[in-house]
Amino acid sequence: MSKYVFKLPDLGEGTVEAEIINWRVKPGDTVAEDDVVVEMMTEKAAVEVPSPVAGRVVSTSGAPGDTVPVGSELIVFETQPAAGAAAQASSTLAALAPVAPLAAMAAPTPRAAAAGNGAGALQITAESARDVRVATSPAIRRRAHEAGIDLKQVAGSGPNGRIVAQDLEAYVARRGQPPTPLRTGPKVVPALARPAEPRSIPSGATEEIKVIGLRRLIAQRMSEAKRNIPHFAYVEEVDVTELESLRRHLNDKLPQGTPSLTYLPFLGLALVRVLKDFPQCNAHYDAERGVIVRYRAVHLGIATQTPDGLKVPVVHDAQGRTLFELAAEMRRVSEAARTNKAKREELTGSTITITSLGKLGGIVSTPIINAPEVAIIGVNRALERPVVVEGAIAIRRTMNLSSSFDHRFVDGYEAAAMIQALKECLEHPATIFIAT
Image 1 (cartoon, rainbow, N blue to C red):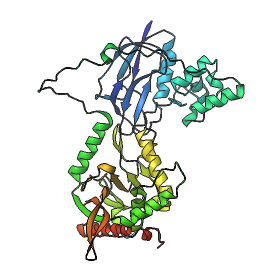
Image 2 (image 1 turned 180 degrees about the vertical axis):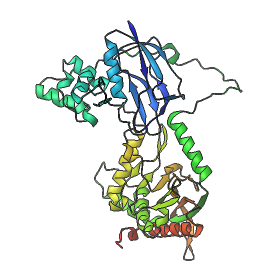
Image 3 (image 1 turned 90 degrees about the vertical axis):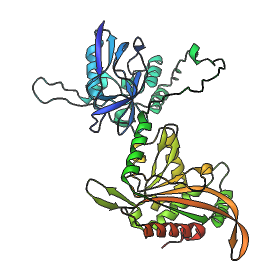
Image 4 (image 1 turned 135 degrees about the vertical axis):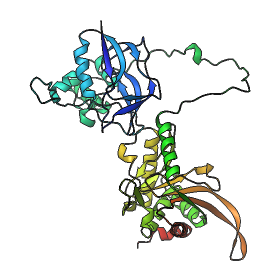
C-alpha cells in the first residue's frame, strides 16, 4: 500500500482558494475513483470534487467553512502502488477543469492539456487524457461497467466531450443491449436518525449554525450593498383592477395544463416600456472606473427564493420578448435556480431586478439593491379594498410597488417619475402593448 496526497486543484477562472462546504467522506472510509469526496465553493461556483483514486481515506484537511488555498493538501488516500501515477495525471487534468455555475453543484470535468515547454516536460495530449480517465459521472461509469461497456468507445456530447446519460443510452441502443440498472442496496437508518423520544428542551438551550457557502456569500454581498449604497425608497399604490381582469381573461384562454400568468411578466413588459424614458435606472455603477454604464437592452433579474438561499436568475433581452415568452422564460430561469441547474450566464448580467414575496408580499417592503445595479422593484400583495372613485365608494384591487434606488445616481424626483410611469402602464394595461 502507498499514500497519495490529493491537493486542491485550480478550479478555473483564476481561482486561488475555495471554501469547504461539506465533506462527503471521513477518515477510514473506502472510496472508488470518481466518488465525490468534498463539496467546495469559490466566488464563482459550487463544485463537487471527485476522488482521483480508489482507496481508503487516511485524513482530511479543513472543516466546513474553512478556506483552502489552491495547491494545499486536501485529503490523503491509502492506495495500491500502481494507482499513484494515474492519479497524478488525473490530478493534473483536474486542475484545468471548468467551473460549474454558482450553486449548480456540477463536478469539475477533466480536459486535455499540455504542461511545460522544456526538454523532458510532461506532455498530455487529448488522446492520452482520454486514456487516463473518461469524463463522465460516477453513476454513468458504474452503469457502463455493469453493462460491460467500454466508455472509451462512447462519444460524449457534454462540455469538453463529457459523457452524459443520453450518450450512454444512445450507444446502448445502437448495440441493441439494455443498460444494467444501477444497483441500490437496502436503506440503512442509523440509530441516531431514528425518531427520538419526546423530551423537554431547557429554556436556555441554543443552537449554533456556522454561516458558510452560499449563505455566507449572500450575507457578504447584502452587507456590501447596504453599507455602500445610499438607498432611496419609494412606495406607490397601484390600482390593478383592469390588469387583473386582463390577466384572468388571458388565463382562461390558455390550454389546459399551461401555467397561469402572474403579475410579474406584465410588470416586466411595463418596465421595458418605461425604462426607455429613464435609462439612468437601467444601469450599472462601475465603482473601479467611476462610471455609470447605461444599457439599451433590459436584462431582468428575478429574485428567487431557493433551498440554498436567495438567487437572482436573469431573463436576458426582455425587450425582445412577448408577454407569454417573458412569462415562460421567467418560470424557466427561476426553476433552474431553485434546482441548481442554472448556467453561469443565467445568474449574471441583470440590469434591473424585480422581487416579489408572492402571497407573503405584505403592504410595504424595502428591497436591497442588487449591486452593481442602481434600482430594484418590489411587488407587494394585491387585495380588494374599498376606495373612492369619482366621488363614490367602489371595490378595487390594489397593490403596492416598493422600490429602492441608488440615490447617488438616481435623484428622488427621477425615481418617483419612473414609478409613476410604471403605475400608469399597470393601471391601463393596454398601453403596455402599444408600440411607440
